[in-house]
Every structure is written in structure tokens, then in C-alpha cells.
Image (tube, rainbow, N blue to C red):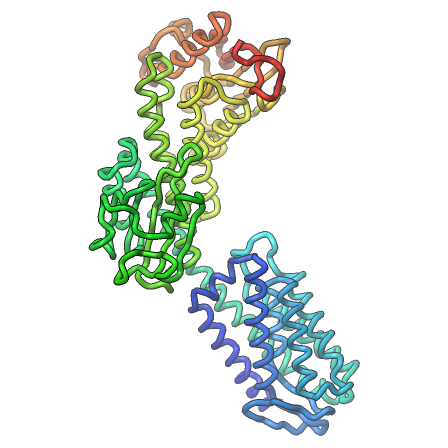
Length: 588
């Protein structure tokens, strides 16, 4: 039995070595993260080859338990059995690829085992047992909700024990050798197969951990990159701003070349290929032209797919991301590698995120430029307002959280994007829907409550339709003002309640807190003028109040009620729905 265990370990070791080599191949690593049907078919082919190899490198055992150790086992006697790592390959296929892959590999493994015995009737049970094991591995243990996770090695060991035990049950019940064979091979096969499954998954698990570390590093780099590039696109998308931005991207990433174009020309290019990808030249790659035409991100894994007009171009892999502003592609962000194997899912995700960030920055810059042309000074003041302190505080918070909770950091990055997207919408329109305003307020609250956990409790009581209209930043300004000024140094028990209610043809907006109240000496001045104080100037409240009066008249001005038990700010405006939601004319 010890000798058989050693021989089994040798066979399993070969499978594990192949697993280690596969993890080093980028095309295989991409399959681990891809839930598509094509990826499942490719995984099925791969693990089917593993299962067939396991059958062919098995150890033949006769009825009298005599071992026949061949280099390749192409055929087996009808009454003989094989000790092999077939079940390991089928189990891992189900764990990684899910039920579809597990069952398909089980079919291939079972049929091949029957072929080895020339379809002898005694071997029929290998087919249903392999199918059952592949299906169970997939249904019980595959993570359907997150294709970036795989079972832990310890769980893999338990699954390996269970799946090989199921195979032993089939042999015990249906094999002619029955108990005589099982008592000899069961322990070595169960232990070695379980250990092999665990080691196989350990290799995958270690790779995923390395990917997570790379993502964490890149997330931090993106945060730094975002802070450095923010000022430049306020000038618009031009050669000067693009050249500064590509230099920063190249500094914080490992791409061999970075380029930015408008719809017709190269604006900036740094890195490999600079001798012919020159600023001012027309776009020189067919891939970029396709992205501009379709508005879809494109990935090239070989130089022919990039389509550079220079036959000596050193660029072999590329990610080209469209820059969307107000629904139109105004240019592209392009990241290149000179070695195609370096292009992995992590870099693809990074490129996609960078494209979104830069497009938002360009849109923000254009919005600010447009805001400067608005004649109404009060609206201009608010629409052009982007709080740099809030932005940098949020970025620093995300950078800190990223070190121990990457998923939370990604969520906060999305909320930061939502917050600035709402600022862009507010800079282009006089009114937004309640749903849009709520999203901005929620993004702001998520970021603030992450900085100050358990300090604030914010309650939303919404009794109006989500498509009801109100001036942008109305609720945002009131909530932000309450969080900044209402509670002083109090750390707990701080509550803010937002109420939206329909009263006939009017909408009442109330933001109330249980703070320390407002100084009676200044309460009547808030909203009427800029009030200088130790904690701020009241500019946001003043701008908001003047916009309300300008849009709806003096009857919609803010009303502030404050005392020792808190402050309530009330606003009443006409109840209007977004066009298409009501027969009313919202601009009456």
C-alpha cells in the first residue's frame, strides 16, 4: 500500500506541475476570470486533456492486486482496474469552471476510461460516477456570484476526500473486484487525491493573492495619478494637457507606451514607438479608428490587431479606451506593451478605469469653462463650485482603506465618481430629478461616513416621485451644512432627517438636525448674505437661497427654524415632474 501511495503521488505531482505552468500562462489566467461560454468550452478542453492524461499515466492493478506500472497506459484488461488522478482532474474542473465544465470533463474522463477497457461491460459505471463527481464539485462549491474567487485549499482537501470516496463507493458496488480492490486502493487514492486537489487550488489561490496585491498597488497608483492629472484637463483636451497627462500615467503604471488622441490626431505619446507616433500626426492605427467609430473599448493581443502603419512598430499589445463626454467620443486613451504576454485582466481593468476618470475630468473641465460664461453670478458661483478639500479628503480616505479592504475602496471610488458626475450634471442644467439628487447625496454621505464612522445617522423620508424636479445641489448643500456645523465636537447621537413631501401642487423639502442650534445673532442673515464666521462664510446657503428665489420667487426662499434642540431648514417649491412623466409643462 505504501508503494502504491508513492506511485500515486508521482502521478498527482505531474498534474500539479502542469497546474503551476498553466498559471504562468496569461491566456489560461484569463480563463479563470471569464464566465463566458467560450471560456467554459476552453476550460473543458483543458481539463479533459488533464483527465485523459491522468487515465493514461495510471497504474494498472490486476484482480490479484498485482501492479503494472507502464509509462503510458493505452489499454487495460476488462477485469483489471487503474489507480490514477482522473477524479482529481474532474473535481478541480468543477470547482474552477462550475457545473457545466465539471460535467463535461466527467463525460470525457468516463468515456476515455471505458475506451481503455475496450468498452467492457464491467466498466460502464465509470461514466456516471465521473459525471456525478464533476456536477457535485461545480454545484456545491463553485462561486457563482464572484468569478474572481476560488475555493480555499482546505475546502479543496475536503472536496477531494468526498469526491474520491464517491468513486470508491461506485467501485465497491459495481466493480467485479468490489471490496477486494477497494480495501487495497481506497486509502492511498483518497488521501493523495485530496492532497492533490488542495495543492492544485493552492497554486491558483497564490496567484489570486498576487493579483489582489497588484490591484491594491494599482489602486493606490490610480489615486495618486488622479490627484496629479486633475488640474490639467480643466484646460480642455489639447496637446499641452494631453502631454502632461500621458507622462503622469506612464510614471504610475507599467505600460511601455501611453498615448492620447482626439478624433483625428495624436495629441501626446510617450514611451515605445515615439519615433513615429508623434503628436500632431494623424491617427496611425486602425484599432484607434475602430474605437472612435464604435465607442467601444478594444484590446489587441498582437501587432496585427493594432494595425500600425509602420511595419517596424515595436508595440505588440494594446488597450484602447474611448473618451466619452456627453455621449460623444472625443478621443481615445491608449496603453501599449511591447510584449503581448504582459497584458492581463488587471491591466485591462486599470485601463478601463483610467479612461472613465480622464473622461470625467475632461467633462468637468468643459463644465467649468461653460460655467464661467454664465451671466448669472449666483448660479455661476454654485455650478463652478467643486470643493477641493472634500476631494482630497475622500481620496486620502480611500487610499487608507485600500490597504485593508480593497472591495470597500472600490465601492468608495465608484461613489466618488457618482458625486462628481452629479456635479457635472448640476453644472449643465437648472433642474435635476429627486433620484439624481438622492444619488449625489448618498455618494457624499458614504464618503463622509467612511471618514467618520458612526458619527452621523442620516434618515431619508421620501414621499414624492423620483422624477420630481428641484434645483441641483438643494439637498446636498443643506445636508453638508448640517454635518459641518450642526454638532460641534459631539461624536455620537448626531441625527439628520431629510423629508420630501408633496403638498397639493407644491413640494416641501425639510432637512432637520438635532444639533446645538444656530447663533440667534446670525440666523436671520443666513441665505440673505455671505456671513463670515470661524467655521465658514455661508456662501453655499446664500447661493442656494438666491437660486430658489430666482427660479420660483420669494415664496420659495429658505425658512430656518433653530433652537437648543436642533435646526430645521424648510423649502417649498412647485411640484413639477420631468417632461414625459406628466402632462404638466414643467417650465410654467
